[in-house]
Image (cartoon, rainbow, N blue to C red):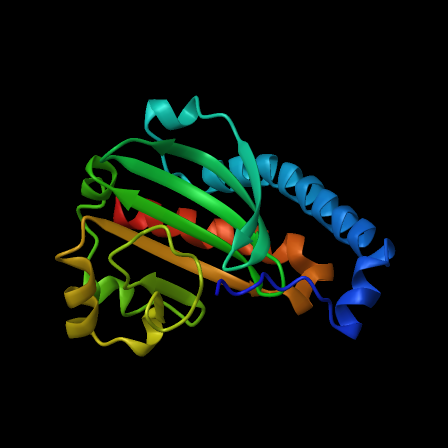
Length: 205
């Protein structure tokens, strides 16, 4: 006999389904994130200019894109991709991400010809980076969590380990993570993260 679909709600679920305040609060928070991310566009532009890193022409023409969803590992998210170019092979993406209940992150993803721009990228150089910079160890560039199978701290890797990560991969993805507890200072943290990544690109290009 086919098992019946569960339609009963727990006491806690009944409370939530009758409460409109929490969903309205959630919507307000998401709207605040959109506002925050819109404000970051000129900040990113300023940090790129200040770093001296010269963007390829197609990135100079890139249009900021803010996206949202409800189900990255079951939780809502918002991303700002700017500047960014997404090709089948060639990808350059500076992504700012809010993941409900977890973090805000700033990542730089380079693949194909954009990875080749970083001719000076060496494990030795990355090994000298200060704490707070992470490198993706996953073969899939589109995972965003900071669990050990996706990101490891650059500072915790020796040169040999970094070479094992960098050399075989078709992409490199570096990230800075900001705790949601830092929300009231998040604009400052984001500015520092953009500056750090842009200076790194300048130094390695």
